[in-house]
Structure formats: structure tokens, C-alpha cells
Length: 401
Image: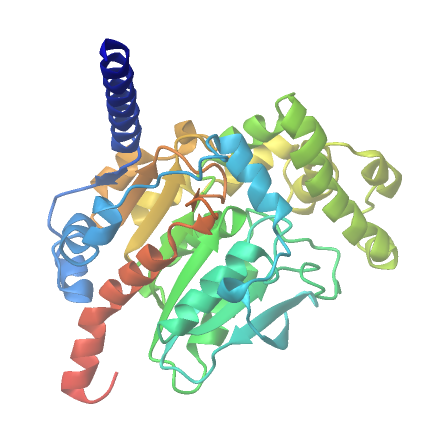
């Protein structure tokens, strides 16, 4: 009898220990908000709230009260990041979309494509993928599907040469040049029936979106933006990606380098006809993105090397100039865009900007649940809805916008 009592007591103690351990772990999975509390007349006029903190706390409370508890078998940032890469082409109910493609010719003869989904709505959402990404990526299709279900026309921008977009100019897309994005922004905003445009950027695309919003300031036609895993300081991100390590050396770098090499190999005639004399043999021998940026991107824009290009490409200096609601979603365990590169002080000073920090999630991962699902989809949609609610009500009262 005593033995049975001891077994029961041991089981209870074990269960209690496990419960307390889980609760303690979950308490570290909340969302930390970095946002200023100073009121802004400009923000009040746009969104009907004093600032981003007020807008989020009042209308997007689910984001701040939720916990990003990672999938149990994806507990680290590295595993989350690798898993995101592995399922890039996976299709399920949450990602099944059918696009209509449109090609746009840029001023230099380059080509950008837009994949449209759920057309004909008065609110449009422009999604901007990251390096090596396109409209076909799992997380991009998941975002398109979710925003479409919330009443948005979705336009996914495919950078030059990505997502089967023809490469018609030797000028490749990069983290520095926002000209293509500006053209696409105005093209989408100018579609018949579109009253409001919002945008979601991923990684390099988030950097371009943030930089564009800072450059445009009060003149931006983008009414609200979301930057997911943005490498605000691309020099910090460049060093992290260039650092020796098993995952960098055998997963991240080989995949990214192979993507660019494949693009160059398929379009050798375009590069040979370019005004700049690119060392294509050296490009084909390159093993790291920093080498490719030294050989192609830096000289294209007149920078002496990749590190000068990274410094010029950083969106961090533009955060203070953003004048539209911008929500940045970053993780503390991102192996590609480390937290040290996130301009938290500038975000705290600008009433139009907020950074939501998750302890876990890696780079473009943020998978939760036993069967991994993307955690942030509804939170992003809720934020965009909240940012547009005031504009929608004004348009309704005026019967025009």
C-alpha cells in the first residue's frame, strides 16, 4: 500500500513538474512590442489612433496576447529556418492558389512579373518575396490565400529572373534598388477599383519595402506595411550569412548561390551583352553570396565591394522617415537576420513603426502546432484591416475615396 502511494505521489510530482515546465516555457513565448507612445497627428489622421502602439493594443490585441510556441520538433531558429526551406514547394489547403501573371517592363528593359490572385477587390495587398523567393514559395502562397480570404486582391511581385520571370536585363534585383518596387507599387495602386494598397515584405523584400516607405514618406501610396524577418542592417545580415558554419556552408549558401548561378547560366547572352564586363567565369566559381555580390551587385551600382553595397542597402536609416503604419515582425533566434541589426530605438521614436519580437521562429519560419502551421497569418491580416478601417469609414462617409 505504501509503495502504491509513493508511485501515485511520484506521478503527481512528475506531472506537476512537467506542467510548471511547460508553463514556464510558454511564458517566454509571448510577443514583445517595441513601439513609441508619443501621439502623432499624422498617424491619428490616417488610422484614428494616436500611434502604432495604440492601434495594436486597441485593435490587434490578439497579436500581443498570443504566444508563438514553436512546433515541438522545430524548437530552434535553425530548425525552423531549414524546415521553411524544405517545404518551399509544398501545396496544401492553406496554400492552394491560382495566379494570373502579368509582365511589366522596367525603364532599363528589365522585366518584373506580378502574379494576381482574388482580383476585383477594392483593397489590394502587394506581397514582396525575399532573395531567391517568388510567388511559388509556401509562406507566400499561404499569405496570398489568407489575405484573399479576408477580401484583398493579392499581387505578388516576382523580381527580375525569379519565379520563371524572363531576365531581359543584366541588372539583377537586390536589397538596394527600390526602383522596380516603386513601379510595381504605383501599377497595383492604379488598378481600376483599387481604393487602398497595403504591402507585406519577406526578408530582402521586407528590406526593400521598408526602404521604399522611408524614401516616399508622406507621399507613399502604400497605406500600411508589414516587414517579416527584415534584415534592416544588411551588413549585419551579410556577416551572419557569411560566417563559417555547417548550415551556412552546406544549406543556406549553396542554395542561394545555386539560384543566382542558375539564373546567370540561363542568361549568359544577356550578361555578355551588358555594358559592364562581368567576370562570368569567376561568377560560376563563386561559393558564397558575398563573392557574387562582389562580382555582380556591387559593381552594377558603383560600390567598391559587397560590404559597401550592404551598408548602402540597409533600410535601418529609413525607419525614422516612415510615415505609414509599419509593423515589423522579427525573431530573437533568426540565424540570418540577427536581432542586433533591428533598429529598436528608431522604431520606438517613430509613432508610425512598431516591432513585434518573438523569442522563437527562425528566419521566415514561425511554425507552431504539432502539425506545423504559420503562426502570424491572421495577425498580419488583422493589422492591415485595422490600419485601413479609419480610411474605409472616411471613404464610406464621403461615398468616395
